[in-house]
Length: 118
Image (tube, rainbow, N blue to C red; front, side, top):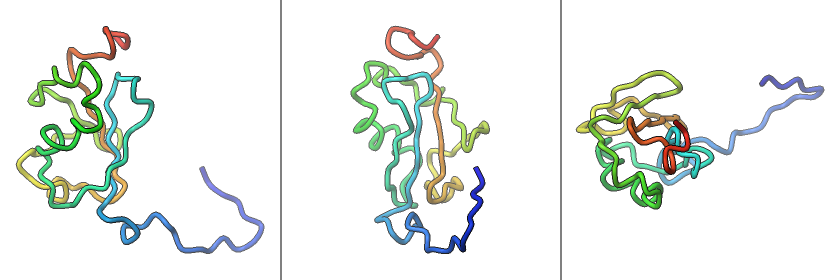
């Protein structure tokens, strides 16, 4: 949404990369409404993408009963709303992820508590 200002609207942005311990990455799990919005995590750029499912996301999404059932080889990823195939062996940066990027994942066969999103 654009802003129409009646006076100069100049100020330094406070959400720049330098103001955080690591780049922020927004991660959303599609069809799992127990989580109303993507989570936002500060993750070092050199974090292997494959570590998301193995080490990072269990601490946030692991409370959901479907999480343990995820087959990470079948997960469908989107980046900024477009289909995306990350390389799990490469770092977040090498997969093209930048500060404040948004990624989402869909887990085929798992669609919310007791299939509530099917």
